[in-house]
Image 1: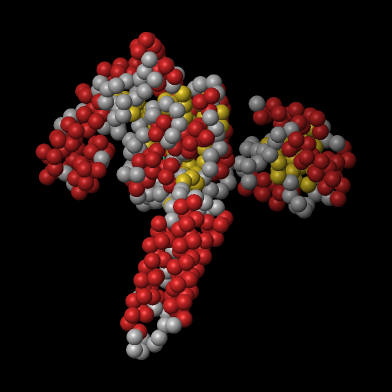
Image 2: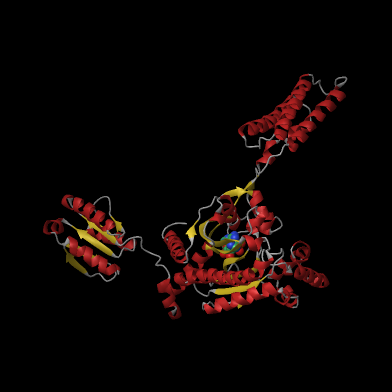
Length: 550
Ligand code: HAM
């Protein structure tokens, strides 16, 4: 990413800060990598994102690494190689990289003891053909195997880390770690930054991409969590309404953000996917029953499905609904729909989300096939698409995830959030700008809202002559302090060349400072778009430029 494109990125991020701030969200800064286990538990180890696409670093695999070419033959080199692994483990234990439990201490001691035996046997290794070599070789090999087994028994703890493929898991981890349930609820946080997924790159799909996301987390009141029957009924009613309003407000916020950016062709799809674990305020489990029905229906049409969908009948039947395969569309249309199988609480919640969206003037489309690819969702799911992106046109995905914080070891907590694909938002804005530039008359209005692409420069200071240099430096400093973007050439230039340079940079004005201007105190300012120019005193110039900015 290079200027001037980075300017557009900054504008998008600044707009997010402003819009999210106006909804009461504060920024959270998260680590780029986290224990692999966190993503496996939160997002689900069977999902594509975690199962196939994560960049993981697993030092456990590197601890006991014996050169395969040596492994078969007893030799001093092999002993040395095993020794390196053994001492790597001992060092890691001493430093605390491997948990310093009593059990581990015992095993590290055993490992060192076995290795010592191996070293002794190595010293008496005969030549391959010598008498009695077979027994010593067997003993040697047994000791290498014992080292390997002992090393594998040492509990390495959470040593595997992964580059984050998403950030909801990290936000929940932070909520627990910092005891945020004790703060005023709900806690509203936003984040932005790079995410990593090992996907096949194409337009709008990258292995390092950027998300802007937001999450609302709300600890569940004790009496509701514990199921106190006197309180639960009334609480449930209020909580149900409140959750739906929160869902709608979060969606309203993303839509307001996209509107402020002038993103085009924005389409919001919503769905409810019920729930698979009894949520804190309900005993019903409607998704599980639906998935069983769906699975049974899919079995009956299995022969007509593609390979991916066939596999998903077993691994994740809901994902079959995501299929874009032309030949499967007719079949999918006839499958049972989750909307017809929601339990009463989920159906009520969904109806209220729709009512809340309508009250907020947020247009939506119901899409019963919108299931999302991460395991933590329940009830509300949504996705937003935009123009100009081809097949990777989802610019935002999100949904409700009550129970995720609890799954990660925290207190019962509700959650709803989304993440925007910033790369895709930028692409869509750039596409819109291209169309405007090509003169499509329908699009000019939109183009005016899209960030101007050119110009990192308001004023180009063209100066010539010794006396002008000091004035030019002072003028540049004062203009910069007043908030203008100023280009000051380090050496004098002939005015013709300077104006050419100003033009190339897309500057709005050229400030011309020659000996005459310095002597008279009347500076020349040229407006580059129309070639007009005028003379101004130092203050007069600032005033003129400020007016031009408004
Ligand atoms: P997600 O649907 O996996 O959800 O990603 C959200 C958005 O990130 C997508 O709609 C897309 O715009 C963008 N995105 C995903 N993968 C790529 C890629 N390889 N290249 C470019 N853009 C990509 C989540 O990540 C959830 N954590 C959202 C969430 C937050 N749900 C609740 N809270």
